[in-house]
Image 1: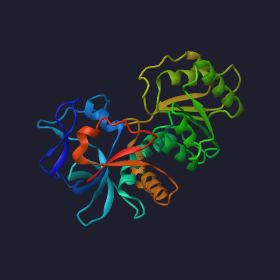
Image 2: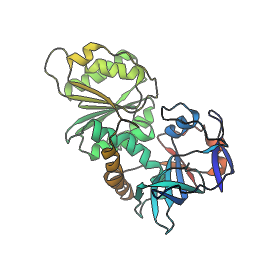
Image 3: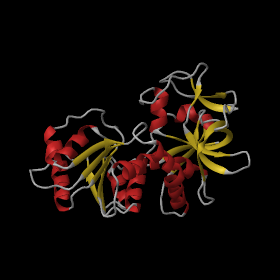
Image 4: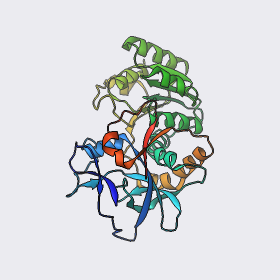
Length: 323
């Protein structure tokens, strides 16, 4: 079969002939792959920069962790791979499969799950989002941030505030449910003044942070209390696009009712991951099929994987390889 194979960390994947995988136990099933999204997560694991990375196997490893595929009986499903997914055939976990609605195309179905995981898991299980909450999404102009805006509103957020660099993308978020935009291209004092004014008028209940780094330091400074009673703020770190480390004042933790947590592999319970496949993903696939959850993709072919691996995908779209 043809596959996209990584031979050494940091190199480009290659489009080559590769042995077809074999199901190793009763919880694995061989499938035909239809579409696979290329995500920062996949690139980080392949390059060895993500904390869950493994070294490429001897003879190379097929890249891609999940995708849209066909079961032997022709049923179209989303599945998480045991073997690498960016290939003609793959093995997937039987207990990590979601049947896809007819109204959802392969590319959108492949693109959506990683963003849902990066948004809904934090909002539901780490932030415990409630109807009427005010949500701040730091770094919302990417694909996952755009999905997070829509999911926050679906879960009942009263107000969604978004930050980002690209002004056009920020403006686009207003059409997807965002209520207020804050540019990180302002100088620090302007950024903090705008955010402090928003927080004073409509106190932020939840922060979902895809950037971390300096913007996280500024946001936490804006949330710091003055000794008065404060609302409960749940700050959820999901990504670290602008830096892995921050300086955190102890006064931030003592002066406000602040819960600081993360959402990612290793941070969820088995029960929560089970709910992802039983409830969350089916609901989000249905919303997308009905046009109530909007995503944009750029569809490409697997044979071009080496040229496309480092492609800069603009405007909150997701690169999807169709097979």
